[in-house]
Amino acid sequence: MLDGCTPWPEEFADRYRAAGYWTGETLTGFLRDRARSFADLTAVVGGGRRWTYAELDERADRLATGLARLGLKAGDRVVVQLPNRPEVFEVVFALFRLGALPVYALPAHRLAEIGYLCSFTEAAALVITDTDAGFDYRDMAADVRAQVGGPDHILVAGSTGGSPGLTALEDLRADAADPAVLAAPDPSDVAFLQLSGGTTGLPKLIPRTHDDYLYSVRASADICGLTPATVYLGALPIVHNFPMSSPGFLGVFHVGGTVVLAPDPSPATCLELIEAERVTHTAVVPPVALLWLEAVDRGPQAHRDLSSLQVFQVGGAKFGPKAARRVRPVLGCALQQVFGMAEGLVNYTRADDDEETVVHTQGRPISPDDEVRVVGPDGADVPVGEVGHLLTRGPYTIRGYYRAPEHNAAAFTPDGFYRTGDLVRRTPTGHLVVEGRVKDQINRGGEKVAPDEIENHILAHPAVHDAAVVAMPDTFLGERTCAYVIPRGAAPTRSELLGFLRGRGLAGYKIPDRVEFTDEFPATGIGKVSKRELREAITDHLRAAALRTDPG
Image (tube, rainbow, N blue to C red; front, side, top):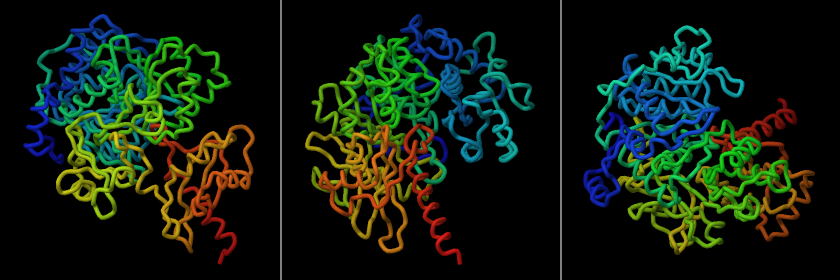
């Protein structure tokens, strides 16, 4: 186990192996094994290229040989920041073959995040693209090196443009593979480091092992009904946990399907790809789902032939029932709600769930050995149907963050349950309904307000496209509620919207104290609404207004 990581207790590891969850498979051999079975099938489509499994396997081999000659070796950490292009797959599988550990960064990350990741992990290399969406990653990489004094190697997918100290990946690829570079990791070894989905501060790093992660991949592929005929559209940043393993590209590769990479998640880009490539499955976050629904429902993409689409996954944040009901009539496919976390636990609604379960819940856990507790503030389990804090442990949920002993003491119970920070309630069938995040809950003078509940009521207004409710500071109550609203067409007036909410029977303390209309919400790197930025925006606005009123 990598230094700074917390292993599963031996009795739990033995149990998971005996149950067949941990099979001893490693990501080092994952692609090689699939290339033997699916050699001539198309593995990846993107950027004008189509690679078969045999071609991707061969490219990963040759790149691994080149990286070894550069000096990379087993155990080295390598920060990988690549957009949705086929190179991302050859890079990560080449690193797996060396036994090097990818550290997955998102394309939206900039100097602060990348500098931190390179420094904290003592990265041996940083892999970037040249430019994407108008941003030059080479300039940022130079700033990272100047700031943290490393890493030793900066590798660029694309032209280096003559920049000193940068090496083009294409120049590294060997003419032939060298079998001697192939690592033989223990299945319990850490395979890579992911970033936590935290909304404040710099992210924690999540160590995932070969055994635990590949169990999640295999089980997800089975639950989601993937086959060699599956065509999966990667609309989100592809190395985020959701599009990587739930079931994601690894689940698709596991069964011999095809991954189509979208350069961005916009309706124009993705709906055209669904039509052209006959996509069967895709996964998005709620804000993206709403944009697609609007574009198809009497919008500019209404003409698209989406008849190939079978499953539309929505996860990353709660998808409100009103929007969830629109998926089948608008897109003509099944909705699958997904609720999970890079730390482990993943929940899916199932193909045989009734419509009300699919619309109103965020699914149930993958594994029979996923232990789920819903507890009150005192740590005692609450009755089924009541809201509480979600705790979990199981065969693919980590026991600790990387090099974070103080944080681990707060994030995990003494007996190994991960405190997820989610507020949920559990149904009698074991499905979970997400009610919000502990840190998002608004304490309005002692009355607790769940933003998700208010947002769902606001979304029921016909002139509202999307809504986000956040806390704003208040001298008297401590916190009040502010609703940010993106209108659909002409915006309702504030009084009209508040009257609508009162008409739905909301308690008075749940009616938003302030309404702000906006054209768009700030987004996190994966496309979820950044409520942290909204809270900061309204706090700054109130502070500035107070200074204008009382400048002294």
